[in-house]
Length: 248
Image (cartoon, rainbow, N blue to C red; front, side, top):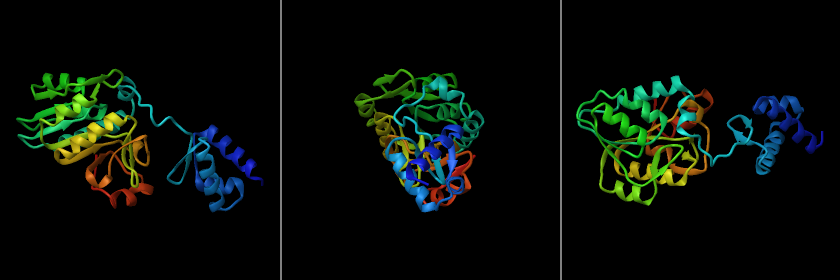
């Protein structure tokens, strides 16, 4: 079979299913695993697919982040489990940074520790915190309209006034080699600095984010605890080798 014919079959199968396993392509094409891997590399370089662990998926714009309203209705049960588990990491009197994001927002309703102080860059978060009579500070800076997250140089300067016992951060991608990633470089800077100012860092990410890589790198897996709902068997060894995982 010619290379171009293999390419056509791979893309056609991807368009039908959205995701395809490596072994499935080996059987479908009747060729070796190494040949299929080379084909996937070539097609990824052309922007026609993206390689994932054990196969390939349709490409997506890894610089574009969905808004708060869209994210709120995704993986609801998984995020709820993660939020509960994250809230249990708090101790009475903790001073924490709470990142903007739907999972960290859910975490607020489960906070039971007393005399907690929260610094956040999420507009929705500070409203929820005030509603629970939790002492809170909202960073100043530029507001991202679709995610309601405060970012930019003013927010970074604002953060320098604080030190945290713990920080709780969201991530759109979790990968053993590339670490934690997110679509927006400016949000990545906020998350990275919050980690640096904290005694301990926790990243909240549901299982759909595991194995994904987005545009802007936050920091290495070793730099934070990962709180998730479940870890696929195919990724468990590579992730647990790099970080402690707290499963919901």
